[in-house]
Length: 250
Image (cartoon, rainbow, N blue to C red; front, side):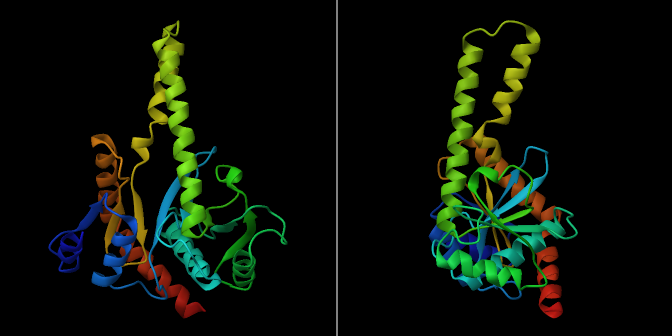
């Protein structure tokens, strides 16, 4: 990973895709690559497609297990910039992942982060969000520490894997009728976790994508394709410009 990131820092490669240790990838990325304006530490972000087809950006999903309220505020700024630059949202709605929607719920860190976001004019804060609402389309950006975000993501992956297994069992049982079998095959492909492999490390000046350690050939191909999309879309440059503009405005 160190050699790959050195090549990226020296502009000898355009992106890095790694299935290695997450903590090591983040530490080495911080060592070899400069940070974007106003950001202290990178975060891993994962886009989730909601029921209405809209994208919700979840961060952090594993790079920072313990976060201060200020760091969560920085994640909200990165998520907002990403949703604007890539998702096309004019005023992205930002929520904090929590154990309840009430103001009194959750640990002190989360409640303090909510106060910071409510007082930040650059953030359109819509309150707390429970994990079962991630796909409801009520927020464009969901902010969490790396522990809660990773648990939520792994639960989603596990549920998707279970759904895929159930659909494959129905296919194997000999579903009758071409329309039904075709629908089951499409759903099986949609629920394949390998098709969603790859999460971006953002906040650094470079395209770095974290692949799941258990990814197969298909999964790794999707992680590489994600890195290619970020390069072709100029995501790092657009994110940096948005963060710099937000810093000037505040």
